Amino acid sequence: MARRYSGNMNGERYLANTNTTEVHDLDNEQTNCQIDEIIKAGHDRPYNSQSAANSAGYDNCVYCIGGSTR
Image (cartoon, rainbow, N blue to C red; front, side, top):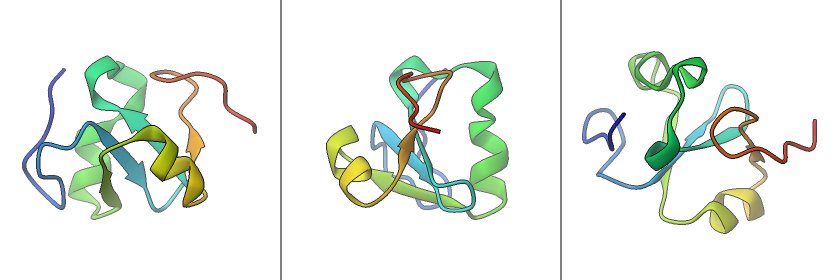
């Protein structure tokens, strides 16, 4: 898909879902990620790196990043 500029996103590569505490890679977005729905619900938090999102407590999305610890 594509990077987003709507919601809280400013073209950042990583979107953290504050509801599920998962982080998504928008450069490898999959249909199951449901990014547009996350943004519409207002659960989007942008990060410029996966490691920053992981350090903030977000787990990897199993679909677009893999290596989920859940």
